[in-house]
Amino acid sequence: MKFLFDDPAFDYQALRAAGYADYGGAQLGEVVAVASRIPGGDTVAWRHAWTALAERVHGLATAARGEGRTVDARAALLRAHNYYRTAEFFERDDPHGAEALRLMRLSRETFADAAALMERPPQFTRIPYEDTSLPAYLYRVDDSDEPRPTIIHHGGLDSTVEEGYFFVAAAALAHGWNCLCFEGPGQGSVLRDQGLVFRPDWEQVVTPVVDHALSLPGVDPDRLALVGTSLGGLLAVRAAAFEHRLAGCVAHDAVWQLGDVVPLPPFVLDWVEQGHDDFANPVMWGIAAQQTFTRWLLRHALWTFGVDTPAGLLRRLPAFGLSEVIGKVRCPVLVMDAEEDMFFAGLEHAKKVYTGLNSPKTLQVFTADEGGGAHCHSGAMRLFHDRLFSWLTQSLGTGRAVAV
Image (tube, rainbow, N blue to C red; front, side, top):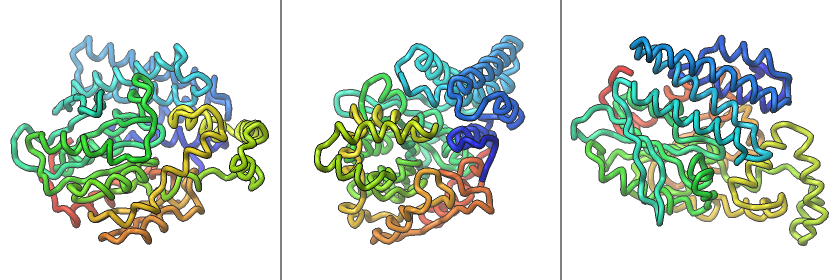
């Protein structure tokens, strides 16, 4: 489903940004207007245009706060947060460059300022993890100690902890669920500030988060669900194979094996297997340079997985898979799939995950005809949440809904 650009990478990221309008993270007219000023594939123009929009909307928030208009300030801050994040997205030639750092700092700050103005401000916290800590936002339905069903959410390859508000937390509150959103190694500020990269044994990340969640007031220990978005769909199912205190797990969307995602000529794979990196690396750089999406994906993956070369990345990815552990999952699992997923379409990842599970399982496929066929159903958040909370209610029981 085409949205605003012929360039697939630009088109999807614009849809992703616009899709958060359901929960105040965008205004459709602003997204359409900014897209009209960006030539397809021009990542410098992309950064400049989205930055200008973010700064303008940030200015609206500043003016509203000065006049005591809290509702308008909060609305503008949420949009500015999303627009700053979108402006930074393709800055992968140097993710530690001054402008990339500035944009992500502003994205975090504007979200924190917006959160402080919410009717029930979430609590920013840090979850103990090995010899450091992981950033998290705790969204609670109310201040009572009444045990409530609770979602733990983490993103995937390029998500941030703040984005969890739009992915799951806002809808969770509306359905009477608490939500704890966190970033792990390879993600957001944990990657950028602490230098921690993705690890395949994600249960070592989720278990301390579950420990933390169960120490909180108002969390029903028998109704704790883990939701992983994008690559997080693989990581969440992996964690559920070992963390049996989870009452449910959602793969949003399902990923079976990361090594299956990289479409390369067989001779390149042979070169890597034989150790001929001096042949393989230039070819892979050349292939990646042909499209905005593949150029971004390769550079981002090198950073987040902590490797220096494309060949090194190909050797690292096979560790991220489910074939050897999926039979250990005990809790019910919701397996989601998107018909036109730009990463996984045609690879049958969801089918493989669903088939491999021995626990109670449900498969939900979102189609292009219903507007939910994009990766992680961007642009169809309400449809995603309808199916998510239908399954959670049937599997774990209902919360008491509140207005958001």
